[in-house]
Length: 507
Image (cartoon, rainbow, N blue to C red; front, top):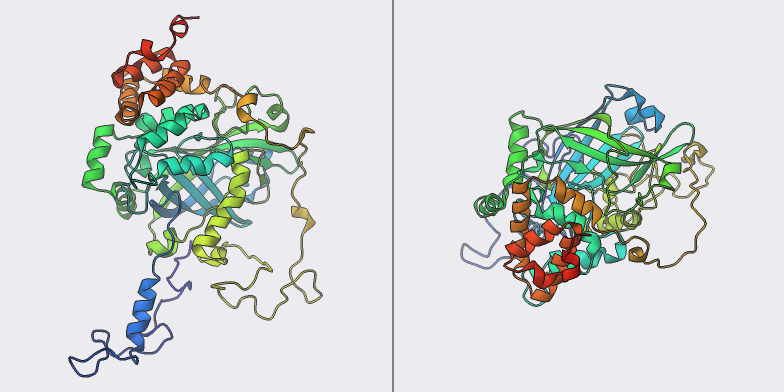
């Protein structure tokens, strides 16, 4: 990828090495304000002082509501599977060895921009592939599931991860109150409270699309898919005590580790894999394949190798290339599509809306977000319109002056959904199994991992009132009796006080 300059060009940011004002006027003295005599007041003629102060006051843009603390780097994707054409016409997969430039941004979810990046928190794992057919943004996490499956509850959940409206402090009560009343969160809570909740830097964790997307081949056949990005550095996690110590020692540990490794030429890599489900299978599979709180078992849908990602360039300017980077799941290329995943569909709307608020209406024209292939759009004007704003060419379509035209070849594939009534369907009524997958995950853990899970949960759950503890421990018990008993013991409670006697007797 070409280096992005602060002024958006590919040339030097300044001319002959001498300083100028923003308008290009040479600056003769950048050390002293213009005053009435050596001890007198500032005068209104000092254009340079007022320009510098005014720009300084506007240097900060709104931080992301979630994923505010982040790190990023550039690299390449290399296709390794010649059989991907069976599933998609997307050109980045058309030949073994084909390389596509990319940008990755890693992040924590709940913390502010100045928070520690070793907090117990999910991690964002967002990738922008600069393909010859436009940008493909894979906006994922380091976990294959999420806490909620209906977007109407997303804002409510995020509020519980932020600050109490009265104390302005993080609140274990808010978290556990919401989780205990939202049992669909159990799978993600179990991941968060396990060792995987505190990765030892961004290089040592996997990434997942989490959502279900789709691929379309040259026969117009549709396949539903989940993307996986497996670290080649191996999974490494901090234990809870180590993460707490690192938070006190170096709040930017993960940023420092990522930047330093690339700077030394130790380029981190990930294997790119995909799970594939046919359209027909999606209608009969026993798990809702579009439920963000559930995984597709690998025994049913094994991982298929796709390629390799490598990060090999640090940003030259963090603000220009990382802070202004805008990822959005609606950015897919021909041969790709979406799915009936409710959370995904809401993100298709919410992400560009957030970018317009944070960066402005022309955020996609910023160099880091602009496609690296030829592109033509009739979207014009607005704040910070870059370049020549389309020049004298028409800003409407159709027109008879040679403006860009639609190409029916790229019309989206029609998707047939089961005939159904539109309404607010109760997701708990239609799927109340919150416990099987979280229990399966618990049973996969080694005994020492289970003990650390209990300890990590107890650190915050022990601080909340008993009625919330009772409800949450009851959920853990339904996942697996040993899970509930272990947490109860860790918070100094007797499981018999929490779970009814009839539930303590094995079925």
